[in-house]
Image 1 (cartoon, rainbow, N blue to C red):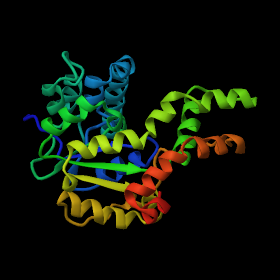
Image 2: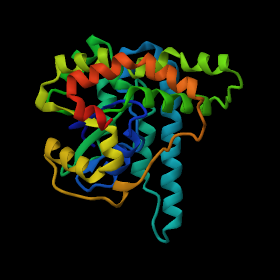
Image 3: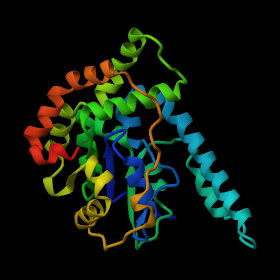
Image 4: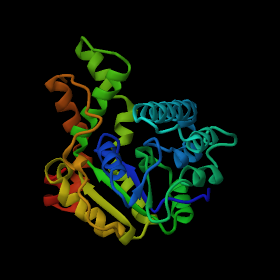
Length: 282
């Protein structure tokens, strides 16, 4: 297997339809995606605080991919388990992991006719030196940044955080403590991260998409992606589906009001940067 680098990278934002993007591209014939959504190569390298959970997450992702493959093989009569594929998955757990050779190995099973895609939302929060490294390491790649209304994105992340931790706040103080989680503010800090990526990536290689367009006009979004990435037209059946739907949890109005106020500067930044029309589609 020959190592490769991805031609397309979706850098985020978290809770902005990146799972939809991964799954729809997975169903295309001209894009190859890894067997798990988030690769975490660049944030492992430049965000030390992520390393404590990235390695265990990789193990779980590889184990799930192997289990899926084995289950699918047994459901199709006469189809043996692909030992070479399972060996490839095992190789992703070899040490050292998360270096350049490992990253290229992730994409080594892609056919030469397909473009490779890495979808890792944490990439949008890389420090300046991380973005500079990405720009040099992936000098021929194209990058997609999906933007969502800052307050709505924060509310969705709050639901996800609480659901994962199996927490249901019962008091206003409890709600606000979780709403003020600095990770929520960091993931939606467009004022910091958008200029950083724009400073290192040429405009013709950086595409900004609006979350609302994915929700309301997914086929039009795919046409933009195809034109941007040099792809032919395809409309996978999954185009209009919802993947990784957020947890069902009612957030108090005062928490929504807090997010609206707390992220008002971020909203104005998006309006000033991309125009009011784009901002209405977030």
